[in-house]
Length: 369
Ligand code: AMP
Image (cartoon, rainbow, N blue to C red; front, side, top):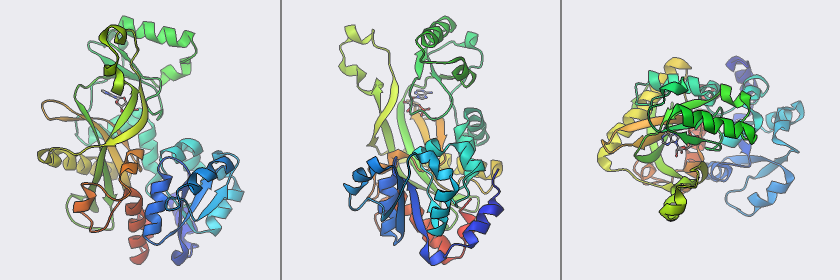
C-alpha cells in the first residue's frame, strides 16, 4: 500500500508553477483536458498510438502533449512514471483509468500524485464495502439477498467490479435464479469465480437520476460537509441497451427478449425543484460518511446512482467516487452549475479550479493522494 506521505514527498519535488493535468485518453478525458485548459493548465494525454487521431479530431478537447503507451498497464512501469514525474503531472482518475490500471496497482504501484483520495476507489470497487458506506450514510438502499431461497420479488443480479451493467440479469424466484446461472455457466458467460462476487438486489421501480456532486475542501458555503462544501454540478441518466428502448418492440415479441442493462450513453435531466433538498442531503451524508470511513473522504467529483419512486423517495444503488462519464453532457456547465459559478463550469474544469486554488493557497496536499 502506498502511503500518502510517500506521494507528498513526490509532490514536494514538483514545480508548482508548472503542474500539468493528465489522464488516459478515454471516458471523460476530452472534458478533463478542455476544462483544465480553460483554467490555464497544460495537459498530458496518455494514449495508445491508434487512439491519438480520435483526440486530434477535437482541437479544444485534445491534450497539449501525449505520452504514447503500447497498453495502459505500461503506465505502472518506472519509465512512464518517471515521464509523468518529470512533467509535474497530477493524474485525474476516471472510470477507465481505474479499470485499465487496476485498483490494486493504483494502491500498490502507482507513485504519481492523483487528484482525490485513492482509498475511495477501494470502497467503490468492492460492492460490500460500498454498501456498508451507503448504509453508514443513512441513505436508502435497495434490499439485497445473500441467500437465493429468500428471493420474493423481481431482483437484478450483478457481478463484481464496474462492468457498465454488462452481464446483469433479472430473476424473480430461487428456481429462476438457479436456471439462469446454470445456463450462463454452460454457455461460458459466467465462471464459478464470478459467482463469488454475486449480488442479488431488489429491482427498484421508478425513475433513474444520477446526480453529479463535487466535494470541495477549498471553497466554503452551503451545502456544508465536513471540512468543505458539496456542490451539485449536474444530473444525467444513462441510456442502456436494450432496456431503455425495449418498449418499441411489440408486446408479442418483447416477452421473448431478455432485458439487458449495458450502458451506451447518457441523457441530461433536471429534477422537480422541490426534490433538490433530498438530493443535496444525500450528497452531504455520503460525503460525511466518507470522511469517517476513509479520511479525508471522497475529495472531488462523485456520483450517486439513484431511482426516484412514486413516493418521491430516492433509493441509491451505487456510488462512483470519481468523475463519471455522465458529466460529459455539460462541457459548458449545467442547469445546476450555472447557479453556483458565474463561468461555464464542467466537472473537468471544476477539478482544475480546485487544483488551481490548492496551488494558490499552498494546500495541494489536502486534495492529493
Ligand atoms: P450498475 O452497474 O449498478 O450501475 O447498474 C447498471 C444499470 O442497471 C443501472 O444504470 C440501472 O439501470 C440498472 N439497475 C442497477 N441496479 C438496479 C436496481 N436495484 N433497480 C433497478 N435498476 C437497477
